[in-house]
Length: 402
Image (tube, rainbow, N blue to C red; front, side, top):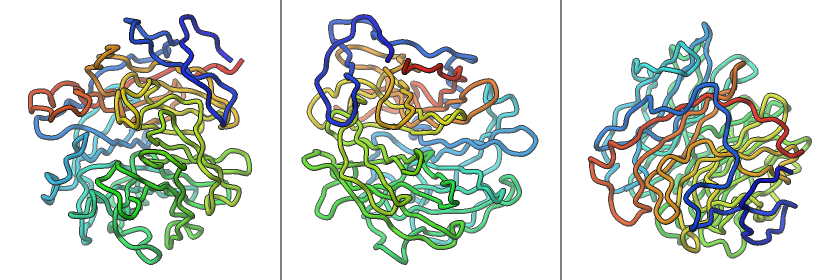
């Protein structure tokens, strides 16, 4: 396990043998190791006054380009303002391994279903049959900001897409469902998993109380089943915005919770049923995370490693960090990716919802960085212009667990 100076004890947790670290308010700098960059962080897609760049996904396509899609939502979302039918978003394309991006055509996606794409996130995945799958959050009015996700497929490197189709309506009601970015995975067996959060019956607005599980498909996305849904006992916000990864013969689900830590659950039957969720050692408010499997087989999670500002809080959302694990149970100390705007009392930035693309030279990471007032009041149009879609190319982590 890595040893870092000025570590602050934050309490014991039950599921891993790692002592959490927290930011001491008396410190003006954070006491964590810093990521090494091939290309340092920079804003490459500026925000606009009324909407912010959030929830991207990335996919390499033939010819060496990388495609990116993001729904241009609002965070924290104000769902009562998202009732308009927004046009489908534009692609962004990079021809230099993510260093620069240009806005291109709108995604040619036929949308003959109710609801809109205007918040949440997208997931691209290159399937084993060569197609590119796209999964997205779907906003449905008066549905607590969510609806069953959509899926579409491209067989020509993103030039055309099958009509948007709703996932799961044959097996569950179309009520408050949520999916964030970079979530879809394919297991070694070929099974597809879409990790989702569902608003618990009787709960308040989105983010209030959620239960998590997966839609799964064994026929390449033609039909879907719904797994068991779980939430931690006593968690103020349940289990929300889950990610999944295959670990040996099991599947790990990792999610935000409102317990002050990320929580996990495990499946021994390829995502159909889940163990009772428990706290990990990954210190975090109820805020975003992205879980991936590195090319060498280790796990990496990007998240906000910081002590919540109050019990069950959604804030702070800075710094953006990562941790690495070989087994999904014991995690390395956090490594800082972006702490721009860090302040021990009130961070001035939110660095959230990263998407990761593995390249030969390193990890291309794209995330949203914007002005934060920790939810105390609405951001003004001028404040919305602060930040944007940031990118960096990080060197691959060494074995941080040694």
